Picture 1 (cartoon, rainbow, N blue to C red):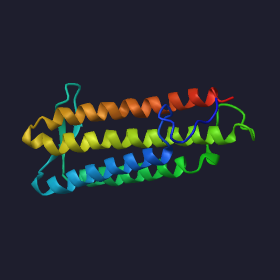
Picture 2 (picture 1 turned 45 degrees about the vertical axis):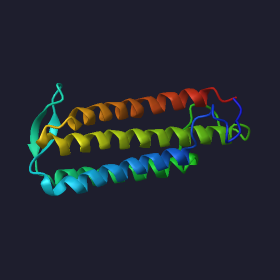
Picture 3 (picture 1 turned 30 degrees about the vertical axis):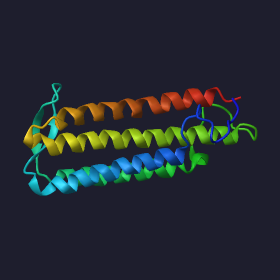
Picture 4 (picture 1 turned 120 degrees about the vertical axis):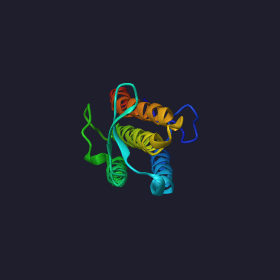
Length: 165
C-alpha cells in the first residue's frame, strides 16, 4: 500500500478532520443538553430492548455523562496524536512507519467519532424522553450507528495496517 496525495478523494479523511468532527458532535450534544437542562426532571438512565426507558435518575446524571464523554474523547484524541504509543499487528520498519502511524491515528480518530456519535444519541434520547418526541427513537438510531463505528474502527484499522507493504 502506498500513500496517496493528500487531496485524493478516494482516500479516507485524515485523522485531524475526524477529530474535528468528533469534537463538533460533542459540542452539539453539550449544547442540546445545556439548552434542555432546565426543563428536565428525572431523565432515563437505562433503555430496554424496545428502546423505551425503563429506569430513571436525576438530571445531573447527564452532566456526569458529559464529563465522561469529554474524558473519553480527550483520550482518543491524545492517542490519535501519539501513534508511536500504539501496538501494531506487524513489524514497524523505516519503510512502513509513516503509513502505519497514519492508519493507526485514523483508527483512533474514527473511534472518537463513534464514541461522540454514541453519546450524542444518548443525550438526544435522554433529553427528549420526557416529551416523548421522535428524537427519542432518533437518539437510539444515532447511538446504534455510533456503536457500529466504535466496533468497526479497530477491525478496519487493523485490516488496513496488515495490508501495508
